[in-house]
Length: 182
Image (cartoon, rainbow, N blue to C red; front, side, top):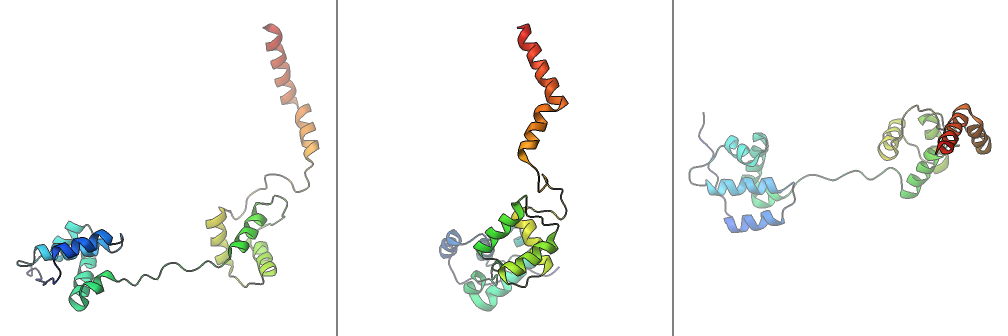
């Protein structure tokens, strides 16, 4: 087993702790690593020991130590995360797609029809999988789902049917019997 690597940290513990207070959750473990290296500066500390103290993978410790040795504290504080990609759809397009998907009378039979509608409506060329994933993530849509109601359903006929159905007639007669017994 090799000896622990001895690294000289130029910053004071006070400066490092001040940086730690301002640090984001992404950068905080890196600064904690430098603090632990500073505490064990004379004898050195292994990357595995640092990993167990900080609670990260030893390879991350190795990367952070190397970046500190090569570029100082500024290299440790910077990262290459670019963030998320911007959305394919604008807010207005998002609202229009949501309205189209939630409309019970829209007649869409699948994502291919939705894709054709989006291309015609917004004049955008979008991949099928992009629209599929976007719809599932943002609208909780499913590939094939039975409609909740028929497109041409007459609401008045439904209420008349419910009033004269056998179940509702039986319920009404039971309720009448209970009321007359009281």
